[in-house]
Image (cartoon, rainbow, N blue to C red; front, side):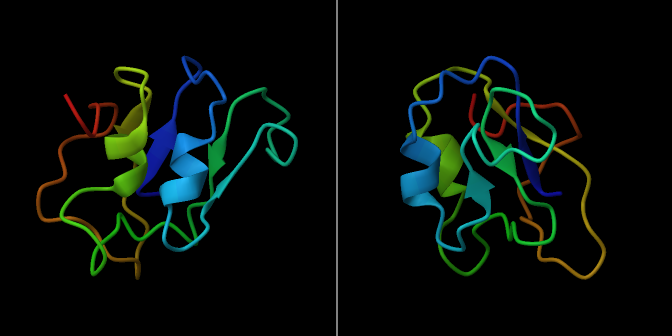
Length: 90
Protein backbone atom coordinates (compact mmCIF):
# COMPACT_ATOMS: atom_id res chain seq x y z
CA UNK A 1 0.00 0.00 0.00
CA UNK A 2 1.24 3.42 -0.77
CA UNK A 3 -0.73 5.43 1.76
CA UNK A 4 -3.03 4.48 4.60
CA UNK A 5 -5.82 6.26 6.41
CA UNK A 6 -5.57 6.19 10.19
CA UNK A 7 -8.29 6.02 12.83
CA UNK A 8 -8.36 9.82 13.17
CA UNK A 9 -10.34 9.89 9.91
CA UNK A 10 -13.51 11.96 10.24
CA UNK A 11 -15.18 10.36 7.17
CA UNK A 12 -15.56 13.64 5.31
CA UNK A 13 -15.07 12.16 1.79
CA UNK A 14 -12.49 14.77 0.69
CA UNK A 15 -9.98 12.03 -0.10
CA UNK A 16 -12.44 9.95 -2.10
CA UNK A 17 -13.31 12.92 -4.28
CA UNK A 18 -9.64 13.63 -5.05
CA UNK A 19 -8.30 10.12 -5.73
CA UNK A 20 -7.57 9.87 -9.48
CA UNK A 21 -7.62 6.05 -9.48
CA UNK A 22 -10.55 5.41 -7.12
CA UNK A 23 -8.36 3.54 -4.63
CA UNK A 24 -10.25 4.85 -1.57
CA UNK A 25 -13.55 3.52 -0.25
CA UNK A 26 -15.76 4.80 2.55
CA UNK A 27 -16.45 3.16 5.91
CA UNK A 28 -19.37 1.17 4.47
CA UNK A 29 -17.06 -0.56 1.98
CA UNK A 30 -14.00 -0.89 4.25
CA UNK A 31 -13.01 -4.58 4.05
CA UNK A 32 -11.56 -4.48 7.57
CA UNK A 33 -14.90 -3.49 9.08
CA UNK A 34 -13.41 -0.38 10.67
CA UNK A 35 -15.41 2.83 10.56
CA UNK A 36 -12.79 4.77 8.63
CA UNK A 37 -12.04 5.15 4.96
CA UNK A 38 -9.72 2.58 3.40
CA UNK A 39 -7.05 2.67 0.67
CA UNK A 40 -6.69 -0.42 -1.53
CA UNK A 41 -3.01 -1.29 -1.82
CA UNK A 42 -3.34 -2.76 -5.29
CA UNK A 43 -4.87 0.45 -6.67
CA UNK A 44 -3.00 3.31 -4.95
CA UNK A 45 -0.34 4.89 -7.16
CA UNK A 46 0.63 7.68 -4.73
CA UNK A 47 -0.65 10.03 -7.46
CA UNK A 48 2.54 9.41 -9.47
CA UNK A 49 1.77 10.74 -12.92
CA UNK A 50 -1.19 12.76 -11.61
CA UNK A 51 0.04 15.11 -8.85
CA UNK A 52 3.28 16.00 -7.08
CA UNK A 53 1.97 14.61 -3.77
CA UNK A 54 -0.92 12.28 -3.00
CA UNK A 55 -4.08 14.31 -3.63
CA UNK A 56 -5.96 12.55 -0.84
CA UNK A 57 -3.54 13.89 1.76
CA UNK A 58 -3.60 17.39 0.31
CA UNK A 59 -7.41 17.43 0.49
CA UNK A 60 -7.70 15.89 3.96
CA UNK A 61 -8.64 18.40 6.68
CA UNK A 62 -7.46 16.13 9.50
CA UNK A 63 -3.80 16.54 10.41
CA UNK A 64 -1.81 13.31 10.18
CA UNK A 65 -4.76 11.23 9.01
CA UNK A 66 -3.13 9.98 5.83
CA UNK A 67 0.26 8.37 6.34
CA UNK A 68 2.82 6.55 4.25
CA UNK A 69 2.56 2.78 4.36
CA UNK A 70 4.51 -0.06 2.75
CA UNK A 71 5.46 0.12 -0.91
CA UNK A 72 3.77 -2.57 -2.97
CA UNK A 73 6.09 -4.26 -5.45
CA UNK A 74 5.19 -3.34 -8.99
CA UNK A 75 3.25 -0.21 -7.97
CA UNK A 76 4.55 3.35 -8.49
CA UNK A 77 5.94 5.16 -5.49
CA UNK A 78 6.63 8.82 -4.93
CA UNK A 79 10.23 9.96 -4.93
CA UNK A 80 9.30 12.17 -1.95
CA UNK A 81 7.92 9.38 0.21
CA UNK A 82 9.06 9.08 3.80
CA UNK A 83 9.09 6.12 6.16
CA UNK A 84 6.02 4.08 7.05
CA UNK A 85 3.78 5.81 9.59
CA UNK A 86 4.93 9.31 8.66
CA UNK A 87 2.15 11.74 7.67
CA UNK A 88 2.11 12.37 3.92
CA UNK A 89 1.45 16.07 4.49
CA UNK A 90 2.87 17.77 7.57
